Image 1: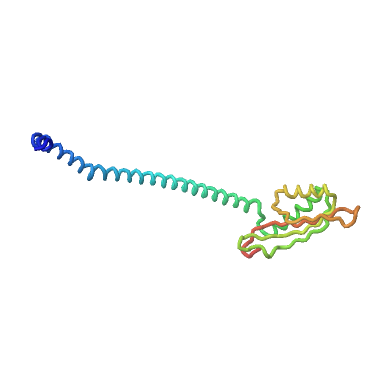
Image 2: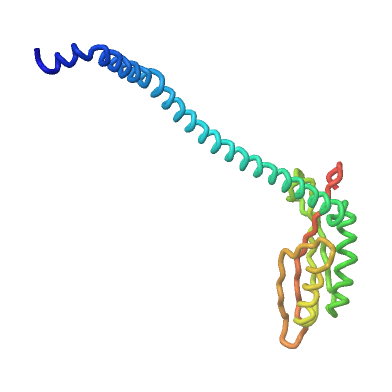
Amino acid sequence: MTLGRRILVEKRATIVPLVAAILVNVAVYAFVVYPLGVKSAGAATRAERAAATLKAAETDLAAARGLVAGTTRADEELATFYGKVLPNDMSSARRLTDGALPNLAKKANVKFAERHTEVDENASKSSGLGRMVSHVLLQGEYENFRNFIYDLESAPEFVIIDDIALSQAEPGKPLTLTVQLSTYYRLGANGN
């Protein structure tokens, strides 16, 4: 009998339970502990992904709320613009330019020579706005034209300067300023 066999036979009462305990430990680790560890690691990964997804969703929600607030503010400002700044109809727009332009010219010491006003038929009716274009001819000195333009741009009336042309027919004669202006107005139900 060899030494190893002899030890096994003599210490069988101790070795068999010890080997059985080792086999049970290996089986418990292989079939219980290891799968639970894998499952736990998977749950941690899923929790991290869920936290990242939640953070992205919260960021999207904050952006959407900001967009809604911005849209609401823009709607309020647009309503204020339509209600307080923009003329109600074509006749209001005409009165606005007919009254303001000669007064501004007189204030700037510029001769109001001529005006021609027309309604822009190419303006988009779908926007609910009409466009009235005025061609104004003024005569005077350069510095006075600058004052006129400054006063026109800083006036509360909604008038847009589309084009400006400065000319002088002959040396020594007054300068001529041709200004094309636009104003927009709300279209009524009949398009006026």
